[in-house]
Length: 312
Length: 281
Image (cartoon, rainbow over all chains, first blue to last red; front, side, top):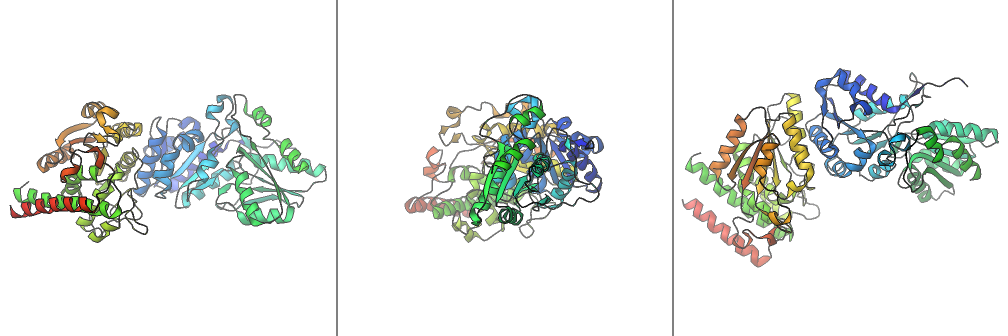
């Protein structure tokens, strides 16, 4: 197999901001002392007068961004997922979510693949937290192409959006020239009727690889990419439930409160007979280590998805 | 300020206090104490200081006010109603199902409310964000925020103050209502915040300490705020919680409790007497 180009979705985020900034003068960026890591530094280099440093004060940053949004600007407020969704949860809930202000939260370093920094920085709870806020759109792009498109879609959408990006360079498998993105619409990457693998973020590529492995065993797996975790593409999920009767969800997030539970709820309430298994971080914290072996250790791999799917 | 202007403001402030009592009595809930301590400030802001238009509450160039101590919404609502943003009768629907007057301010429901607040320490950050945005957009508008002296125990308040000073937001005025009482008791006993003015100065603010019930002093503070360039402005206003109603005056008990029918009558009698006295002057 040819070498696949790799890029972190956080890099795509920074590049997309810098690109959009050219067209949109109302796009401003708020940052909490992590510009080099969140990649908003790329935007800052181009538009220093529109990049507002807030220092290490994420709660204040979120509410400041809310105030700026109320004045008609379109702020992207950035930090690591742990601090954007975790530390600043209540500011996001009360100052952005409740008034439904037009703030985009660009959260990088989501999940276990943060790697060496360890559990304190490996946020596996952000989907659960952000999903629970009424009116919040939650996006988790699967590669750099989708990330770029998601940033643009988030800008065009009026209302609060949470975007989760990753630190790790991952395969870029979408075609930049033909890819179309719409908030709330899932993407079927591969057809199959034996089992559906519904994945988000960096687990999408793993799901595609898992489907290849299953194919060799004679199992035809459907692969669905759900970048939009909220609002969930219910139609696509239920179609998979109906046609496959078996679903495996895959996410770099706690199995509690994330994509897996969202899918479970929709399937259970539909009455469609369908077994669901969740692949994700079990109810435990991460730890330090290089990202790729860590992901494997936590079962966030094509091999594990294939194993779970085959056993279902 | 002329004596006539001062008299007019005093009359309006008394009416605002009556609105606080009307609302909290009808709701059988709410926060009269801090609403009354800030009543003179609300009145001055909405009738003299701010560039606002009740007929055009979303004017993009208007001045902004953020009630960071959102629980004193009854005071804000009374000032907004008196200024003509919505009918006075609405005050009696406070906290009721279907009312636009939520327990804490909601910017999407109540005309004239510029930010949804209630969770302490957040409004001040929103206000700082508005001031920063106004500078970026080249708007001349000013942003005012009112905080409680208990509220400043929230660390986020000081993050916001740092932000305001860092960006030299001289279009930003933070007013701290130092009434000395919070839910669990006197502020100095619950969590002594010490010399608030000195702390604000240390954070890069120009500061004035005033009597928050004296319109001359309030005016002087806002004049100085307008003259101050390159720095945010802080007003530490010394007030008495519950001012205007005898049994609520300087009482912790009336932080978050509504008057019953009998108490309502006493309060309204006192405020009506005050009104008659002012009008006879």
